[in-house]
Every structure is written in structure tokens, then in C-alpha cells.
Image 1 (cartoon, rainbow, N blue to C red):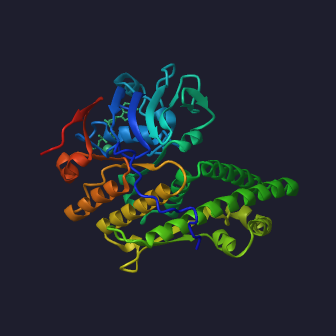
Image 2 (image 1 turned 45 degrees about the vertical axis):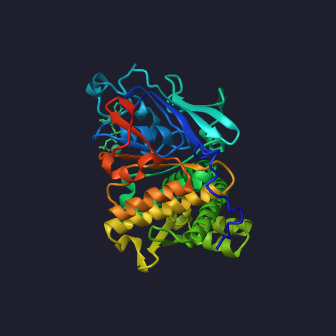
Image 3 (image 1 turned 120 degrees about the vertical axis):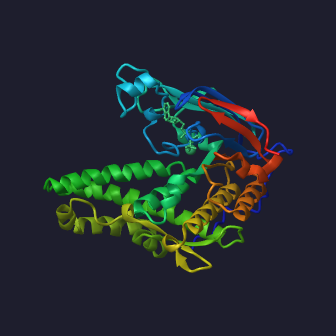
Length: 408
Ligand SMILES: Nc1ncnc2c1ncn2[C@@H]1O[C@H](COP(=O)(O)OP(=O)(O)OP(=O)(O)O)[C@@H](O)[C@H]1O
Ligand SMILES: [Mg+2]
């Protein structure tokens, strides 16, 4: 197991009682989803967003989530986030907008950091297509990865409720997101690996037996593949270490199911790379018949077991699975908190609704103990009553967000 030598015994590190060091102080949405414009001013405490179904709560979390690398918590095309009017919807249910309609949106934020307040922002302009622009301290930045120096965002959404029972692909994407929030280059590696694999699959499927070309692709595939497995293995090792600690949520035992990662435990990375590219070469005939690559980290899985019950997570009850997932997310938050770099902002969509009173209280206590800015949504503000003045309250109505007082 990888020992997290980068871990330190940092405490929650409150900045002069002003809330967590890294948190959003201000969030402005322009033409984003259901909002023409919305602005939230935050004081560093956890945020509760309460409102009816369809009011726009998840849209706000999504806006925060695009302040990091990737396509945000819904994982959709960036152009889908542009605000569509009823007229746009009448034109088409699919795609970004009617031809000629300007596809643009922006999310800007003021982030409190150890070096003072930093202005960041991202968005699409009609000229940039699907490629978003990123701004940092008033100047253009090369990519959203640059924002990771000031802000890290992790999330949990209702879509993850089936994480343990659905296919391995969902768990791989979940794991890759965890890696990405601490290592912004991971997304580039995964995309590059998939691009090269698609090229190899096409060559093999079409029977174009060009050994030099195939060999070049296989060397690249092995290079990216081993880097991906190494990054995932590193994260799983560190998370497993944290999951050994006491927690108010059921703890899980996790393992990466990936032969390349196992090899990395026994051999140097260059040797694993060499062996993998040779295996790919030897597998050309069977991969050509299958029409896809049958070996590699694109088939890896994250295995999760309920520690106390010694039960695979997939066989646990719905509530137990939810609690295991929260345990994993908190372990990840704790890991990021102790590593170099900004403390994470936590987006918890609809997380309180499925928890019993005791677990809900444990959730709130854990958030406050970690000193993180957690953004929580719910239709029933009474579910968050236990947070009291420890949180900042907002009410969400279609197209608008208002500062609110806590329920008494
Ligand atoms: N691109 C868009 N342009 C305009 N409106 C959009 C766009 N995408 C989604 N919406 C609308 O935003 C509204 C709010 O969605 P959101 O998912 O944020 O609601 P919610 O408050 O989280 O509701 P729930 O409690 O049901 O989860 C929905 O009515 C949805 O149709
Ligand atoms: Mg929602």
C-alpha cells in the first residue's frame, strides 16, 4: 500500500475565525442554466440552498463545479449550460441552442485563499464553441487546471446513488474524478489514452496491418496507460490509509482491480510499460476480432466493501450504500485537506434527504469539524435545522437566490 507521506497533521486551519482558508466569497452566474444573472455572497460557513423541485439548486452547484477542470457535476457538454429560453426549447429539445442563437455563459467567483482574495472565472463565448475560456486574477489562463492552485471542488450527487451496483465504467469515472481533483493533469492523460486506443481499434478493425504505426500507437498507449494506473493506484493507497481512521460513517475497504496497478507494486514503471506494449502487440489478432482493446486500465474497477459487515458495497442496503459513499467522499476531502494545495469545497446535492436523524447530525458535525465550505441542497430546509448558525442559508426560487434566515 502507498503510504501518504505528503500527509501532515494540519487542523482545520480556520483563518482568523473567518471560515475555511479556501472558500468561495462570491459567486456570480451569468446566462447559466435557469439564471439570467444570480449572485451569492458567502462568509465562509457551509452553505444551505433550499427550494422547491426545479428551483435551480443543482444548477448553482454545477456552476461551482465548472470552476475546476472537466465538465462539471452533470458531466455534460459545456454548451448545454447556456441559458435556454422557452423560444430556444421550442426550436429543439436537443443540442445547445437554435442556429444563430448565441451560446454563452459565465461563472465568476472570488475565492478566499491563504494569499488573499483571488478572482477566477470561466465560460463560453459565441466564438469559442465548446472550448471554454478561463480567467485567473483578471488575465486569461491556459486551462481550468490552472484554477486548481486556488480552488478544488469535489461533489456527491444523487446520480452516484447507483455507483456500487452499476457498471465498472461509472466507478472508473468516479475514481478518475477523485484523482483529477488532486492532480489536474489526470484528465489529459485519460483523454489521450482513449484517443490513441480508438485509433488502434480502428486500424485493427479495418484490417490495416501497418506494424510500424500500430507499434507507435501501442508504445503511446502503454505510456499513458501506466501513468493512469499509477495515479489511480496512488490515490487508492492514500484513501485506504485515511479509511483506516475512525469515522462516524461506515468505513469501506477499497482496492483497485487493475493488473497494471498490481504490476506497478512489483516492478519499475518503465518495465511495466514495456511489458504492456508487448502484450498489446501480442494481442493484435484477438483485439481485431473483438473490435476493441481487451487489456488495459480502461477495464479497471474500484472494489468497495463494507468493512464492519465484510460485505461488497453492491450487496449493502440503499441507505448503507449512501453512507459508504459519504464515508468515501469525506475520506477524500480529508486527504485533500492534508495535502499541499487548497482545501476542497464540497458540493453535496440532496445529501440530507436519505439520511436518518443521527447520520444527518453526524454529516453536519463532520463538515464543521473539517472546516470546509460544503454547499448543500434540499427541498426541505428543516432537514438542515441541526446546522443552525453554523451554516449560511439561502432560499432558491426559479431564476433567483436570496439570502435567508435559518429556521428556528
Ligand atoms: N440550459 C438551461 N436553460 C434554462 N433552464 C435550464 C437549463 N438547464 C436546466 N434548466 C432548468 O433549470 C431548472 C432548475 O434545475 P435544477 O436541477 O437546478 O433544479 P433543483 O432546484 O435542483 O430541483 P430538484 O429539487 O428537483 O433537484 C429546471 O427547471 C430545468 O429545466
Ligand atoms: Mg437538484
